[in-house]
Structure formats: C-alpha cells, structure tokens
Image (tube, rainbow, N blue to C red; front, side, top):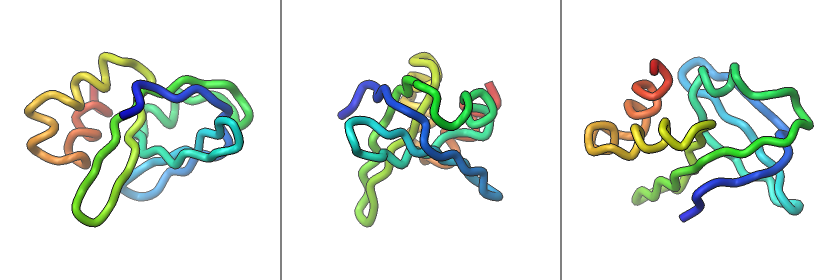
Length: 96
C-alpha cells in the first residue's frame, strides 16, 4: 500500500520482544513495527527519516512494518518470511 513514508521521528520504543516507532507526517503519527536493529540505527527524536513499509492485514488487526532499506523489506516480503509470519520475518531481517 505505502512504498515508504518520510517524516519526523516522534517516538521510539523497545519492548521485550518487539520494537516500534512513531513517524509523524502532515499531522498524522504512523505507528510502525521495526526490528531492534532498525531501532538502534534510527536518529534522535525529531530527526527526518524515510522508512520503507509493508502493511500487514490480518483478520483482527492491521499493522505497518518498517525498514530502513528497500532490500530488507524485499527479504521480509519473500515467500520464506511471509509464510512463517511477520514476527519471524522481522527476526530474520533483524539478524542480517
């Protein structure tokens, strides 16, 4: 749906099994799931960034996954990662 989103990093968070960020663009804050590696490479709050995205649509939820590089997103979108689920896909990409 979205190829990428450019905006201002307004929040980043590390949880026990996941990481996320909020990217503000034109007054809208996009909550984006990211890998721990991506989180460590992000700039400071308030910096301008560009994140490549994948929209995951499930029966009970929708979420955006974000990647700093288009190639990482392509790996995530590969059959291996897609069939094994988003959580496993982000783990695979996070280790590359």
